[in-house]
Length: 377
Image (cartoon, rainbow, N blue to C red; front, side, top):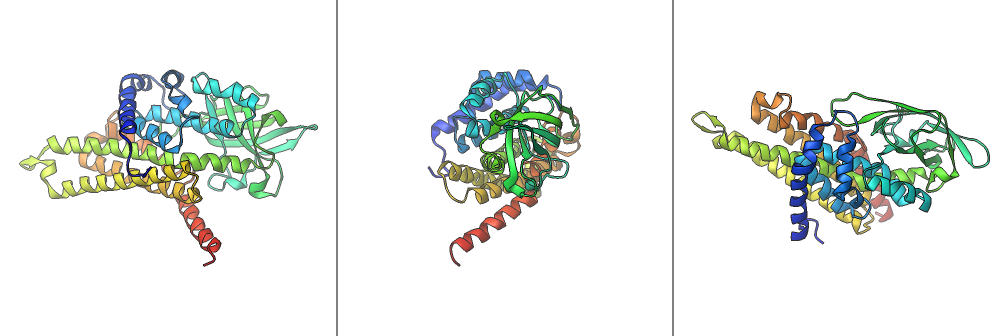
């Protein structure tokens, strides 16, 4: 399927998702506490069947879900995405017992999942993880260290944790563990950030894990992390595209009816050209996101580079579009509770998480040179 052409069924599904977000999800989001897990909202996503689709849909449908929800209710989009990010490693690498225990609960919105990769000294450089998994008996380890900037922490019911099992081995010495809340030695605190997402710190004080908690293979956890990020990076771009489209829609509406200088704002060439630029960049980002997702679904070999490009372009574009929308709306857009004030706080974080823009540029360059070497140029 060409990345630039959605079937009518998919287009109709996106419209249905936007309607559901307005009618069923946004009222619950408005009752939530910023920076905390909104369990009624997560449960409603489960009742609507959207969480289950995280594990049955391809990358393109994941992007369409995230974009559609983000246009109407960013909190619902984020709650959906964080469930997928935290539980996808279980879906992709879990044992039958792990999958049976956690995937139904996550899909129904009864359990909240988290993805714990970043650390105080290992954010963009994920291979520099310092949280240690020290051997404990014949088939066990003790996790010691700290994770930070972790979505859904410390309230998550289950956490995918990446720990160093082989010192000095870089990316090849990391193992993924599935750690339920309540394990002895596991504590955490929430962080108060500019964006209203539930994010916190987790501390591990000799937390016990066994071979039954390993996701995938020992010392192969970096593959688990990168596989998850390659799937979700284009959909971070979709989240950004949804926010950009919401800002663009609001700006078109505002400039068409706002009186200024004897006419409407839209009649000023400077304004009209800015709106056109917003639309151009949003559509270009959308097409790159869809192309990356389609490449993932088709098993293309260049997914890492495409995913990085999509995430990079879309998040940088959304920052530009939202900022321009605020400028064209004037001071009213700075008022607490205004859509654009909300989007302005939301749009900044995606340029950092799941690989900052600088990291994405590094990935793109690395893939270009790798392709050249493999091609024998």
